[in-house]
Length: 375
Image (cartoon, rainbow, N blue to C red; front, side):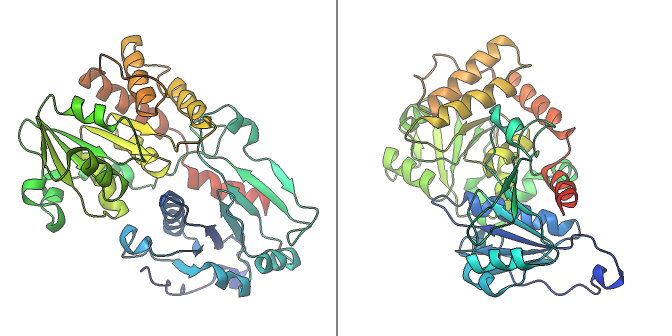
């Protein structure tokens, strides 16, 4: 479990420096780890840039395997404990998770009135640019008199950007795949063999898995099924077998966020889901297929189509058509295509897409400026 951070040698505010140095970040564990995963990445990235972060969680258990070493300047505390805390310089709410009423009342009573920012879900839909940065004044309840600001991550300069730590490119360039696979938890027969295509699988329940396994089994492939839903679904399809045609199946232990990133870097094709792994797959610069969080009203379809429209805008038409077909099938929006994308073309476009995003300012840099403007 991440330990509370040690105090800084000096509080900048003691010498008249009024930078926003203490941030409160609230997150709740929803059904699939992603909310806490995003919150931890954001908290640790803020801390790496000189901010002290108090991360308030209703369930801290996932951090034991996501981030067992913690991060300097990040204090992890229980949700209920925030009821007795004094608000810091900025208050972040992730995905509309709320916060304890007593904490809200203290925000309203504070002379400094910290900026209250709700970091929303990522989408490529048009409403994101329209909604990003809008205020929501509270007229009643424990937050009466406060203004909540909506902050929307996104893929364009008119949005809140994407999480990307400053060191990502250097870490990617220096990555030694052989050394990583030799680590104790990922050694021996788990590493890709000569001539095998490496594919990672991180997904929600998906009725298309059988068709996917059949496709992957047609050429030498090693499938890395992540712990949890993906491993359970694969086992339900193939039982205790670790072979399915030309497909070799490896069930992984729970990986830290850092090791999961490196798994994405090591694979030729990544199946990802939700939000956090979705963004990390794009920074990996390898072909990927995204499964949006399934919604009963079909709202996830619009999210998938909006992202494909943006990502494939500059792609050659044949590649765009085949990539769209695989995405749509994996999300249950269409039948599986008869032809898959050309691997070399797909890889080239994945790198080009990554670089088009990398020239934009990252989410944390934009958020720091946004908070300073709203203080």
